[in-house]
Length: 317
Length: 280
Image (cartoon, rainbow over all chains, first blue to last red; front, top):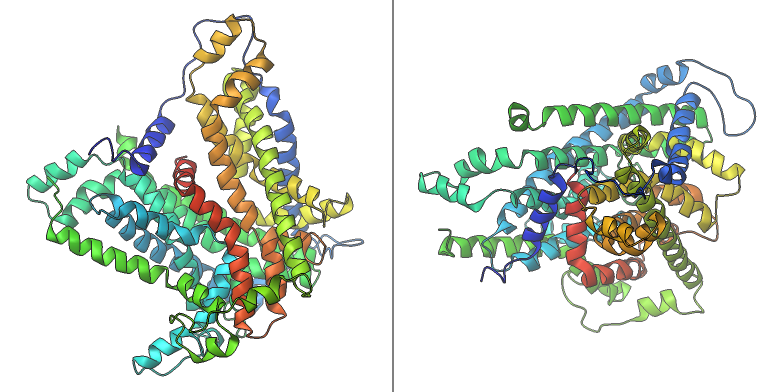
């Protein structure tokens, strides 16, 4: 039985433990041919310097100008940023972005972790179920959003369902209060499998003997999870929460396909504002300022997140 | 110790039910795509079609239809751009990471940090200047521009994954080849290249999935050009339909088939690729 069971989890474990090994020290013997030189990285480095570094620096520069994308521009200092925080719609989309990011973080992590715990070991159908739960992850967010747009339609399945329960039908995507929850549902739904796999990789590092020992000592399922498993999967928690936070702050596809920011800006997000300002209204300088605000949010939150969820046990060791 | 008990059976049943609920949207989509529009509007969404029809797909994909040209072109654009980006990411990424991992020069450490920081850098800010720059050198609206842009954006990830791999790959094979008289280029292409296929698999799947599904960058760089990728084609096509759910379902299905077929074929690799990519 044991040999037959060497599958995904075990492979993931091996990959992880290999990945965490220390890099090899300097070679003791030296031959006449060196194996590689740093300048082999030059072509890749040049491309990254242009596509990522130079364009990011340029974006930061344009954020302080009033450039429209063609012709001359003036340096306007902090004027763009003052305007952002004085425009109620833009402040609103900032809140929408934060709502979606934190809602996404909380719900996806809880549901993903629950699926991971259920499918970690024990269940006979776990390999099939893992494959199925991961399936939505590989489909494009645009395609997924159109399926859900039908589900939220006034004559759609969701209203058929709530109607059968005796609850009045809702205009899900057209309601200023409900629409953002609809976007959140789609975001969470698509990424449960992704977060599940992150946690499965973490759970695979928890030795079954430790859980058994705790069980013999009389710890119930919840206490085993809280005091044995959770401390050991701390790195996975850090990765999963940071990734969901970043992804949530950048949400664009689902909003465009489901509501396009409506009704009345109730689902506008910063990423959508950046796109509209820069490409629809041709205000490149102002769009760059919005992008700078979004980028700073992402940086601050992801660094803070890493700090808050850092692996304390490793630091003590 | 942990045996299969009644409790495990309960958990198993609950989990199967939860997965079934999770996949309900796919079921609704599949059923709907074989119904006519009146059927979609008048029957329960989860009910199978009473008289399955493939008219939706015929209407969408037949050569005479006005939309089919865009969809086939979108498929071609997606394939060309994704395959091109993967090839460039594998070649540039592996060579760069190998050089960095096997060199003891202080420059190798410094260049590795440049890649590492680029992973953390948010991409939003760079998109606008990148668009201006690419437009001025004629890289907007054609697949080659997209391949270069996607490669630049994903190279840090590729280098990071490859570097991790090479650091844990012993140098014994390479040293043996050197003793046998191979020069370093022969070592790389004849010895290292075949050995690195697990890392290549991870890079291809992760980067391929990101490029294939990308909407934001493709919308900015390709919207309104003949080389729109599938997500952009789908977006503009659905925008032209008003609640013609039968046709919307059909194009969503068509757009999902390539990636789901590939997933069915290599699902274990997909899942491992993600888990492997996350470990940093």
